[in-house]
Image 1 (cartoon, helix red, strand yellow):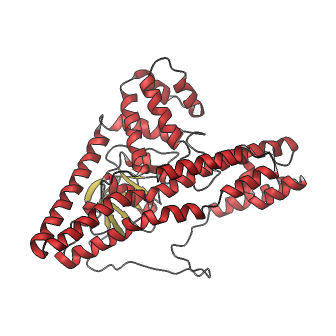
Image 2 (spheres, helix red, strand yellow):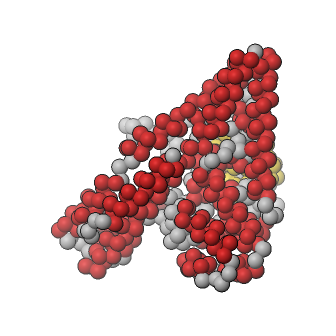
Image 3 (spheres, one colour):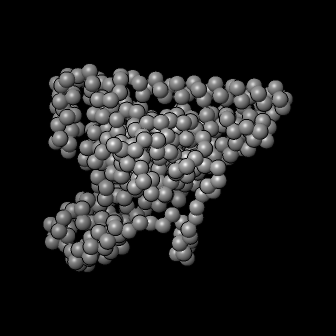
Length: 428
């Protein structure tokens, strides 16, 4: 899969680089921006892991009448490109913490010059190699990264820097790797116990089936993040090309500033370049609309006809005051809540429980320090859920208004087995 991704990226870069500015450049972007073939190539690699996961869950209930193994077996998965990113952030933090010079570089708030300042250091060759390798692979990540207009880490690494500094301040060297390896070992031990119990109670044939499904799950589920990674790499290529076109439009007086290009759609841009028509008034209207949309709250469920459906969870036999959601990563943890709605402006200290509206790969550095996860939106295969399982931290998602009900500093208990969150200690 990595080979396919790199070939796809190089081919796209070549096509765009060899195009001329203007309509030819736009048509080159349009040519390489279809993800249909990518999905046809990558989705079949995702299906075995997802189906194997569902089958394992069903088999555990059917064969053993329990639900204690599978949720542990699918934690600590190896090979997830986003989880690896988080671990590398921890590695960078460990190297920085041991060098006062590097600490000074990263404590500077001149974030946009970080990459230049790191590479201008004399010595520090090992760190520079790791840092540059990391940025080459992950520089296009950002919170809310599906929006092309969002600043990527290469454009503004402030969120990355804050996560690294928080890790240095509140955790010990190497703890992220030790915790991850412990999660892997716990998962493998659960897998062995599951197979052994099935063989004892149901025979060796059923044991072989379960063993095979476990292997499929642990090998194939990590692939889940690769399509998104490819899309983000491509979006960064497209963004750079669009900004080059925007510079020409600003020079011609058709736009006020380069980033205004992201307030028009592709065909509006195509027409403006073709006819040299000003986009300034259209952009002003779009900015006004954008501000209005920012104040809206999206419904949890909406039909294709636009109907908003109200849904609720079953609430029988629950502790008083329990916030009900979906259990997506097993385990129970109690700790201090940290409510974060914008990861570009916040960091997470070691041992805090992350409470967020949602997450995407741009939030991943926060997970290194998280003891648990609560999200307003999510499911079994959404980003935060997957990363929480692979780091082995309890998680509950789908709790309406979690970021409003829970306050930073409150002590909460996250029950990733039952799918509930309790506020155990209010703020003074």
